[in-house]
Amino acid sequence: MSTLVIVGAQWGDEGKGKVVDAVAAQAQLVGRFAGGNNAGHTLVVGERRIVTHLVPSGCLYPGTRCVLGAGMVIDPEVLAAEIASLRGFGLLQRDELRVSLHAHVIFPFHRALDGLREDRAARGPQAIGTTRRGIGPAYEAKAARRGIQVRDLFDASNLRARLQHNAEVLQPELTRLGSGERIDVDALVDAAHAWAQWLAPMTCDAGALCAAAIRSGERVLLEGAQGALLDLDHGTYPYVTSSNTTAGGACTGMGIGPTVIDAVWGISKAYATRVGAGPFPTKLDDAVGERLRQLGGEFGATTGRPRDCGWLDLPALRYGARLSGMTGLCITKLDVLAALGQASVCVAYADGSDPGRDGLTAARPVLQQVPGFDDPQLAGRLATARTWADLPRAARAYLDLVSETVEVPIALVSLGASRDQTIFVDEPFRSRR
Ligand code: GDP
Ligand code: IMO
Ligand code: MG
Image (cartoon, rainbow, N blue to C red):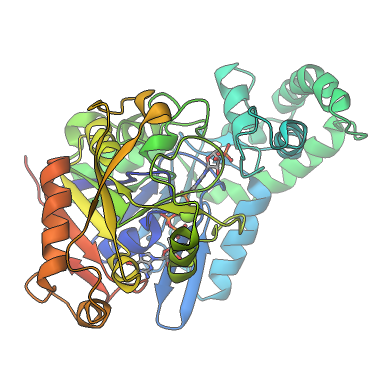
């Protein structure tokens, strides 16, 4: 019996899909606990490349149950398309998918509002650069207690009343922002009725399911979305997403207590990327950043936007590690950094500060060159490594520096997008109880 939480440790897109898929080979239940289809998690097996937005990245293993938790916001149209696409690959054939009755539903008016607000903010200081998927407006409704949960889809008269309430609140803003559309409550009730039909057999109490799995000795993997610095409370507010992306979110988002969690792995690239607005102290606005983007294929899995690229920021990573109480660090894309022909790393900020929530905005990074990363042979020698001992000395020294500065041991190293390009330094499921 063992429960492992895996979260992003930077600004998202760290390789959660890849790592969760690699670890899920040993899990019986994989749950997503926060966010919605703002996430894009890439799974590569052989020639196949699958991007999941809602379904947990354990979905490639027949028989492994996949659960969407109460902390998520779910766009039923996106979920239906994703299920159909996965079934097209021969996956999810055995009733593996479960959806929390308490997750919140994203409606078309949430998406419209998200897009119109971003258009209005354009490139000004108010623009967050959201994914325009309706995530913020859906979480806003939840906090305002007018949100619509999955379970509300099964009660037409209550649903109608709740939709009417939302229309009264949101229609004036939609109109003010230039939308010519009216929120059509009747049409939405009909759409919800259709969603309820296919969702019904999948619905569950995700917390109860998770707790029962843990009690019966199963290995449970809880997959985060986004990353620590996009956390609503502890990230670079207001340039964050609208949910708790840190490990605590696994408890509230699944409906389990912190005492059942045995380990927390945080994922970081060997460098850093960010998509959307907000502070990014080590960002490279030059040809090196561009080359990193090309080598790493740093374009959003959800929106296709180019990601900003820069050096690994150890003070920020240390902050992320603290927020999630990480017990292990997974470093991905070391192959990309090794191919660059040079590498630097931010070891501290000039004023000696620890970032905290606000420190990142003004941070001036102190950079160090990483020895041995100018060796043209490095990438080639890295490519064939399958154990820690196989790794070239310069790569091990870099990983040691990261681990010592962040004060978290390395648990996994990823050297490519596919499963076999993974070095497990630690075992993912080790019970401490
Ligand atoms: P996620 O949102 O954290 O799941 O990450 P994304 O899937 O959005 O972005 C990570 C990208 O890097 C994907 O295209 C992955 O296939 C790819 N990837 C993950 N790990 C590695 C790695 O170690 N090396 C390389 N070259 N690519 C990787
Ligand atoms: P995964 O799970 C990277 C960013 C957006 C924007 C901010 C708010 O694939 O790592 P939102 O649509 O959530 O209101 O946007 O958060 N963002 C992500 N960046 N990876 C993600 O997910 C992200 N999800 C949201 O770019 O800056
Ligand atoms: Mg992603």
